[in-house]
Length: 268
Image (cartoon, rainbow, N blue to C red; front, side):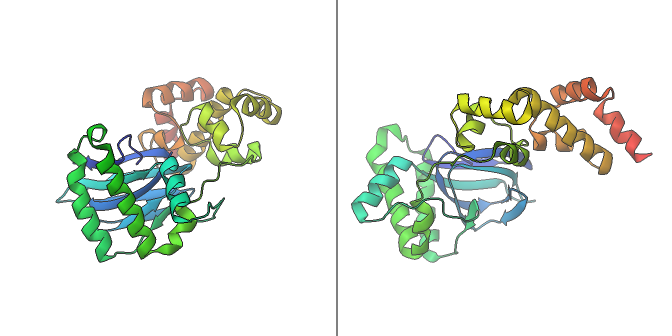
């Protein structure tokens, strides 16, 4: 959902395509066709074709990008860089907000001005951003002005410049172990430096982060396979594994049985 380009179109002709994303920047998105399903800590939202959304920064999300029967999945997104938002806030008299509580993905109103604007923006997907920096920045600021004019209450979210605060590491990891993140990102989101994260982690769990994450994900997989009708191919991505073969090997090493055989045994 986050892209290196500031104006970007995501297209999938086959699917659904599922995964997870850490949002590094605030995003404004329009669903051109298909639909997006977002799992925000167990709360599932659907964004069908024609819908607009605002995605908050520093959030962990699971998603499913789903083409429709007759059209591909297509979404248009604009990334608002934090430095630009700070500059804009200073220039226009907006005050920074901190830790505003709201869903990670906000469904926006369907408004004619939004529709006209995204129609014009679609042409910019093919523009060389490095060669047209001023033009791109102008369109991004125009997007920001439209959002604030049409839904001024969004300033509470747009200008939230807070950083993750230090949290209870045991609770944080139990809530987020399913996300496939580097340790540096886990540390940042828990409000710690990497060194402090490792130190606090070992105090809390008496083991290293890597070993605990592997064991915790495998235990979760074992529980799901024993108590549901789901197969390994349906769960390995959702519990933090990237590769099915690695998941299968690790599962067999820990439990002495292949996950496919545990699934079969559970059905008898």
